[in-house]
Length: 216
Image 1 (cartoon, rainbow, N blue to C red):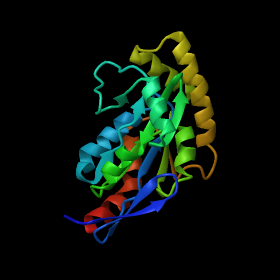
Image 2 (cartoon, one colour):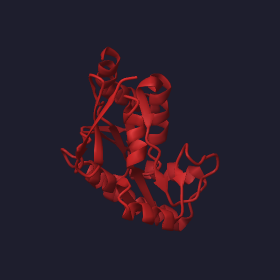
Image 3 (cartoon, rainbow, N blue to C red):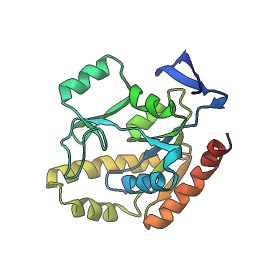
Image 4 (spheres, rainbow, N blue to C red):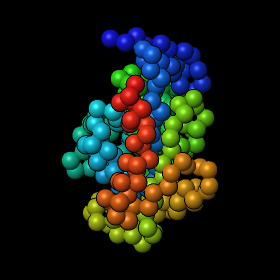
């Protein structure tokens, strides 16, 4: 098995520098309003390039939705547990979204990097700002809806939103869309109007990184 060489650095505390003679793949940060279709695009990416990607499972204090599994979709924890872990410095990034805490743990990212895979982080704009301050050298992709009206329809179609939670999500979404529209905040912006077309854009963007891993 290839040896792991580590060095102390930045917010992460430790960072994987090499795996054998290979440089660590740059993580992929996906960002976009809730309901925009990030999970669907992630799934398609993993289905096609599974051996080369690994999903960083986030922690959250919100309740599981129907069909969601602990440890697979999220680590569902209490606010007290989450806050204690944050205070101990166990997270690369964390933020409060629609009344719930979300965060990416150092351990979750290291687990993926340690296998020489491209680590996928699904985070909000607050998380993006925090990751930009680390040495992860991630590639940042923003997924946006064709319109706010379209996003409302998608959220309503879930059947899980109350009027209050929907309004909170839309307020947050507008701020995220403003941040996503600023030139330089993201390496790639994709409008998810058609899932297949949006995925093709994401695929084309990530293909050079995938080929680099294959050739390594």
